[in-house]
Image (cartoon, rainbow, N blue to C red; front, side, top):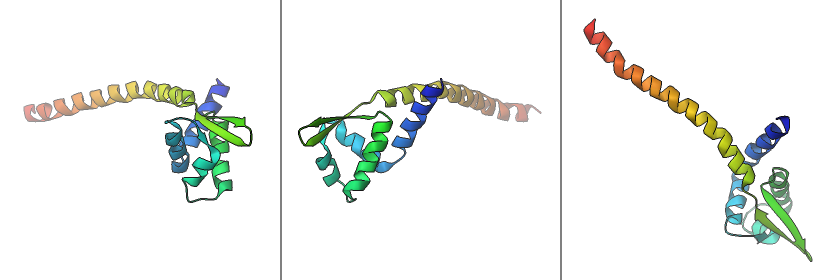
Length: 114
């Protein structure tokens, strides 16, 4: 359970940054070379490398070295697991919002009857 919690924290932490989310969007269309990803941003190559390490630590991307180039591909499984975790809370909030709606619908009727 603790390991799942760490992985979930790493996933949310990695997804919190807009640059990292943009990198993942780029990888949705297929694998990319690190230099292509770096060229798409107006930040230094070392800064992109740091973002890539965060994504790797969260297991959101895979890296494969072929010759001198590093190819990156998306691993969406951790996002699916985060989505499943959030879905559990969606049921909770929907039930509470339904209860609130029912309460608010009943409230005016009770006031007019008094």
